[in-house]
Image 1 (tube, rainbow, N blue to C red):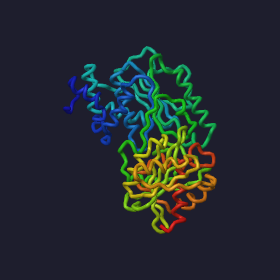
Image 2: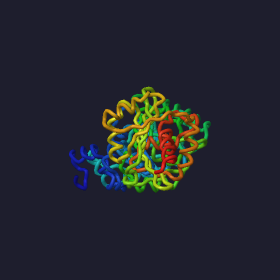
Image 3: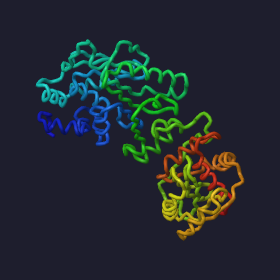
Image 4: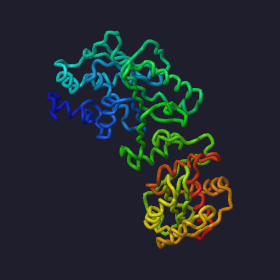
Length: 417
C-alpha cells in the first residue's frame, strides 16, 4: 500500500486488513488477529462480544474500529460506555488522534472528496465534519455506566470494561451492572448494534447477558511468550491471573489451592514416571489424565483433560504416556470393573488397578494440598486441568483433575521413587 490511501485498491486493502493501520496511527503491535477483531466491530452484523486477556491490544483495536466507523459510516452515531465517567476520556483521546492522522485524512478524501476534521471535541465527545444528524447529537458520545441515558439513542452502542474487580467482590455491584446493561437495549436504534469488550470477573457477572461471545485467552492469541505468562502468573494471586489472562473465574474465597503453580519446560524430568486416569463414563464429567515423576521432594506433573468418555481417549492417553515413558497406568476399578486395564492390555500397555476407599475431598485436601508447594507442572499441561485444581472446593462442579493429581501424589509418596 502506498503512503496515501488514495485509490480504491488502497481502501479495500485497509478495510480487509485493518491491522495495517496500526503502525500508521501509533499502534505498531497490531497483528492479523487484530484485523479479525476490528472487522467484527467495524463491519460485522448483529451484536458482538470480545473477551480478550490483558495486554492483547483490544482497546487499541476498538479505537481503530471507532475511527473507521466515524469515517466510513459517517451518518451513524456512537455511544461509548465505560464503568466510570472519568474513564471515557482515554478512548475519545485515542480516537481523536487516529482521526487526525494522515492515513485517515487520505481515507476521508478518497471517500468524500474532503479530509476529516474534528468540529467538536471534548473529553466525553467527538464530532467530525462528515457527520450530519437532525437530532443534534454528538457523533461519538462517551458515558459512564451510571450516567443518565434517558432520551439518548445511537446506532452503535459500545461497552468497554463495564465489568471490573468491583463486580467480582460484590453481588450488589454485579446486579447493578446487569440492570444498567439491560437499559442499553432502550438506546440502540432499530437495526443498530451493541458491541462489548472486556474481561470476565465472576461466574454471574454481566457477561451472562452478553451475546455472541468470542474468547481469546493468553494461550490462544500468541501475543505472550511462555516466559511472560510464567512471570505474570507469579506476580499476582491465582484468582487475578485466572480472570485477567485465562478468562476464567476461580473461587478465591474458599479455594484450597491459593498459590500459583510452578512450571518447567524440561520434559526429561517426567521420564520413567507413572500415569493415572480418572475416567469419565458419559455425563458432564471429564476424563483427567496425569503423568508424574517424583524426584526427591519434588513431584513433576503433566495433565490432560478431555470432556468426553474415557473410551474415546485411550489412543491419546497411550501417546502421552509413551512420550514420557510414564508406565504403568494406574486406575481405580470401583466403577469400570477393569475396563481400562482391559483396553490398555489390548494396546500392549500395562495398567494397574486399585480399589478406592478414601473420600475424594479428604484425599485431595490431604495429599494434593500437602504436595502442592513441591509440585512443578510441565509446560503444555492443559490450562483447564490446572483451573480445575485452582477452582477446587468441597462443592466444586468438577473435581476430575484434582482427584487424578491427588492420586499420583499418594502413589508416589508411598513408593520408593
